[in-house]
Image (cartoon, rainbow, N blue to C red; front, side, top):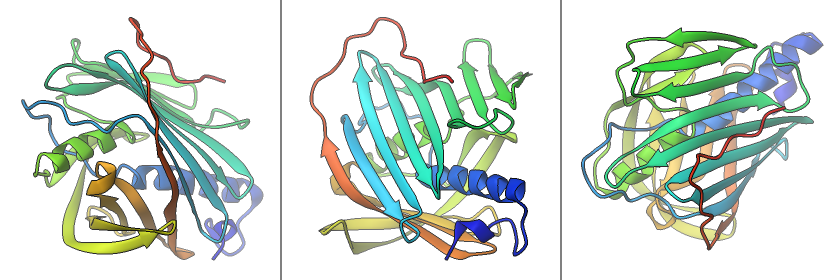
Length: 261
């Protein structure tokens, strides 16, 4: 199983790079393929943590962190994929009964910005500023809530902890605001990273190329296994190998910012 064949059997170097970028984005999206609308209930967000995922015969190594900064959260993923490096980040603001994304970035570290994605959420103006390849467009009359590929994971965690999960959610990505659908499976026991967890698998169902995420209630419904059935290389999986709760909270009056180039 190799990411180098993602673009086709005789893919060129640019095609392979594009395939790797798309695969990285899908791996990141796998962490966040689920979500639901906000509820007027007390928030039940995961505590701060760091985690690491590995898979695809050592080709994938992802390091995830969630930091609390006053009423803001900074959610980041750094992924190494067959020699390529990617950075993904979401800044979330939380009130007493709801939360929402403020900023999202997905970029290739050290690469061109042609396929980079950046979104700024302006709820009061009902719009999203979406930047793709260095060009920004305004998505107007947006019906919130809309999530990005990381903040939706927090929505999923909170909803599952409350005992419910919507059958669709809206997420902004390179194609604009789109609806995603999924199906909740039966509970199961999984062993990853030398630990055993009660878990539940959730499949994304709105596309031909299937994907799933397996989440564990013990870890605040965060993923313990990710899977994507790529058209050219078959199933690609990554498993949790480290999970560490982190203590302490940094005070912040202004929202943190994702890293730029």
